[in-house]
Every structure is written in structure tokens, then in C-alpha cells.
Length: 158
View (cartoon, rainbow, N blue to C red):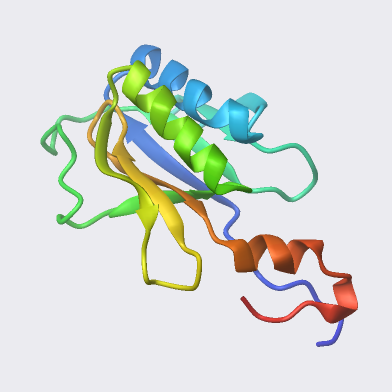
């Protein structure tokens, strides 16, 4: 399997209570870290899905769909069956701090201020909630960025 690309997460679709509220929030949070792509698609029920992505082929995307059911409570309970949180990698601690400032300026809910965690060496993150209470994480992990900067033949598991 030498030379075979490793698998990666392709996309995650989140259901939000209001596209009019959530799409500007996600664009404001993610565009400064490179998620500048925006396209629309159709879901299996004919609903519009708004996909945010980074430029390039085969990149990950975040889809936002407006709710069609009120079966689950809002704010979202991440300890029910479903997504616990979604994490976005950023290239520096300074960007984690800057995005936390943006969240505070927007009146966003920060669950845990930016700090280092002991999950892996240098793991630095802020945890926050989107307008529906879905938990998000902005993470800088230096080993990931060092891995990307290394020549392809010198890359190791991170």
C-alpha cells in the first residue's frame, strides 16, 4: 500500500435551527482560517445544504442544513446520541487566541478559554458553542503542522 493515500474525513453535515443565523456565524468563524469555499447542494429531501470548505481537491467540508423536525431539544445536548463536538485545526496558537477574541466580540459562548491541554504535546485549543449549542473546537497541534511541513518521504504518524 506504499503511496496509497490514507483515508480522511470527507464531510460532516450539521442540522441547525436557522440557516440565516448559523451560516453567518460559521462563515465568520471559519473564513479567517481558510474555509473560504461556499457552495450549495441538495439533500435527499430536497433541502439546501450549504457546504463550507478550504480550497483544493479532496478537502474536508462542513455542511449546514436547516432543521426539518423538532424532535430534539435546542440547545443541542452533546451527551445524547449524535455529535459531541467538531474540531477545526489552525496553524498557530495566535490564531486560536484571535478566533476566541472574535467569538467574545460576537457575543459567542466560550466553554473553555484558550489553553494547553495534555491530550498530545503542545495541544492548544479553545472550545465554544455555535448558535444552537453545538460544541466546536479550534485546535493548534504543532506536531500536525510539522508533519505537513516535512518532505513527503520524511512524514511520520502524528
